[in-house]
Length: 162
Image 1 (cartoon, one colour):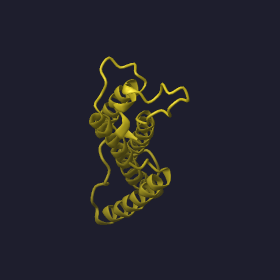
Image 2 (cartoon, rainbow, N blue to C red; image 1 turned 90 degrees about the horizontal axis):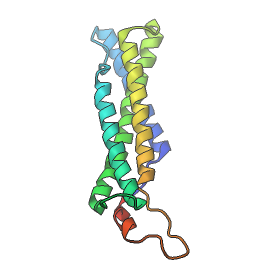
Image 3 (cartoon, rainbow, N blue to C red; image 1 turned 45 degrees about the vertical axis):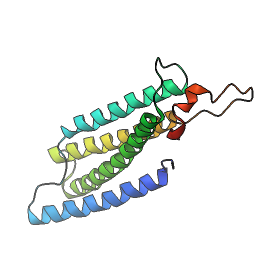
């Protein structure tokens, strides 16, 4: 499985930001509400981030042989997929709201409820991207040591997760 690429996530965020900016301008021109998620949706983003971290900790403990019960390789792989999906979603959501925020600040300054909501969503998106990278690193199998003791039964639990 391929790893997260910071350049691809940055391109995704920029494209989403451009779409958010354009959509925000079109909405303002037509008198529609600002296309920004309410700040309460940050609770959902943080719940997703917490779930990814909890799963990542379980994989990390299995990888380092400190878990009471080893995870199956399929569960570890699913945690890795969830971490990467969280990073992609964070880049897209954060980029969109950054574009909306740029339009709002350029049009009337910072301080409205919509601009605060957009800023909070940008921060939430960045948190998801960081969590995705951290948990992906936790899902990597450590390199085998030269004494032949590494890569034993505990490492097999996450072999499919790199």
